[in-house]
Image 1 (spheres, rainbow, N blue to C red):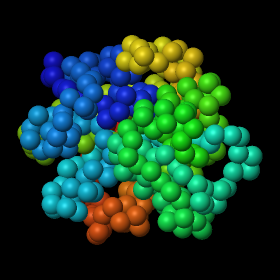
Image 2: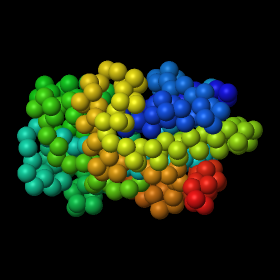
Image 3: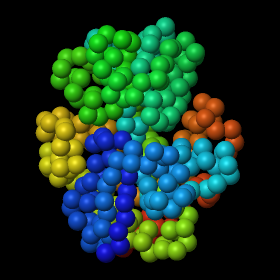
Image 4: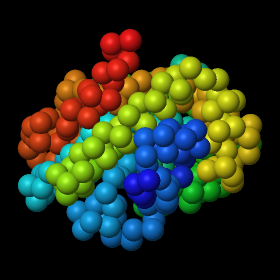
Length: 307
């Protein structure tokens, strides 16, 4: 068995595909012994750990590779799409009947500190709705749990956060969903697997086996009810109550959050690059072929295409 350690960026059911693949034995059937660990184990960041050889495969946002290519000209390749929607929701303190993004003008949104993609997506959505982001106070100085606690205590007008915080606040009556940022942003490769350059050069077969396991798990997820998925991944999310976990998974299913196959397509790549460029996160265009390798996904999907 080839051992691989794969970090989970944040402990959220948004990344259920990874623990599901482990629990269902899909990685093991491909000869891979995959251990899921928190990304916080790598204090310099998972991208640096990938480049330093501490990690070989990492789950994360394509924006990490955009930023690295923009800043240093280094290319870290993504080979399998996992999440095809923004994982975040915009919560209001009171029910927002007929919510429009113009309602955010002059208001304070407690945003997500840990990664820039949700913030960049929010900026793009505001501009799409003819709202100047400068007219909205977006605060991004608190970690996710602290931002939720502050919102619960009466700070801010809106909260942008992910699961399971969303379902928890809804059940407490402390928040209401104003908008799904996954629906508002549209389809794009929000999260994908990337590989260390050394692994791609040395063991392409390992990456292929990994991608096959990912695709098998994607097909399993597509045909299962939220309760069944929640039961499989519950050991990874033991701190989340079963009703909250099932509700979180069901909400993600309804907006078609998870990719149906591992192929990271050019159309989604272009959408994400435009978001990062328009928000000033990156300064120049980067070639799809430099940051995405579709060969593994294409090969992993081939047996199903023939059947």
